[in-house]
Image 1: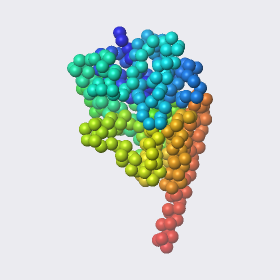
Image 2: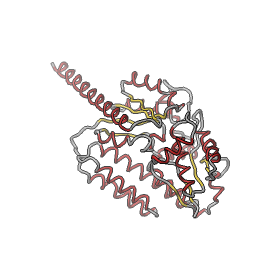
Image 3: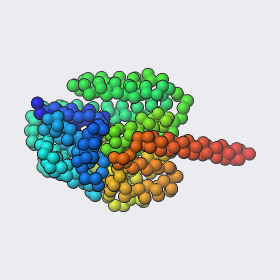
Image 4: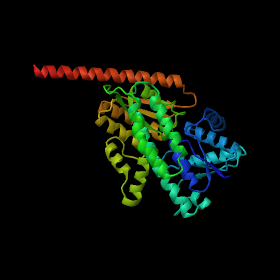
Length: 368
């Protein structure tokens, strides 16, 4: 059997496995980087490169050792060094004597190189591809429901248990009809979780580099920690939205990035690559929407995200929204992350109480 390794993009690897199957081959994947794989990548990579490269590299080393012949990873443009990482990882793997071949997902003609190489027939290719898109939409909906429910659940862990059960079912779904059935019942599964309907949770936006937004191993399970602290989260990387943006560009010549650029224009006029524009624009958006705070996740040394940190400080000051900056490398400690998040939650809660007291005094003064 021929296998292809999928980079860890959180729960979306479940859907990407179906996309790989559209090529007529088998997927080799996990929804988060394993500690063992991360150690392999750290040991093999240059010390100066960012943690996402080390995570990808370790994952591919593990895949090669398991007999996997192929892998793929996303490309990038702009100043983000990710545009060079596929070639760098390929060279490191070659120097290690490994034979796994890595494809990029860019286009250099009508078909991407990965599709040309395997050359699946139209029927083999198209139906699973539509199924992939359907699974991505379901995962988006599950994520949003989990963020909302976990913050007000009465028994900690109920939401995660429901989420994990649905994700297992989705990973085992082989037909679009099965996936539609999972999508249909999901809302009821979350609605059955006992919640405190009187609770008004803090609302926090999560922005930054995609690997840290989506890989639970790299971000030290930040979504669960925040939810357990009674915070309703909004992670601003949803793959379904990214695919919709690509569709608008191809068929309607419209780009979501144009609207993001317009929103961030006062603070960021030049492209710095990666998801830096998203970090700035969504921080402004969340401030305007009344979010209690923002958290910016960044690998140490990430050029785009580090470049916009001074801009985010200005946004925080101008828009009066606290923004917590979180930097990660291989030495980052889970306990330290949890402690910082707990302290940030305390600050946000005190800030909300203070603002509420000020507003009440204002009402009484106006009434008098």
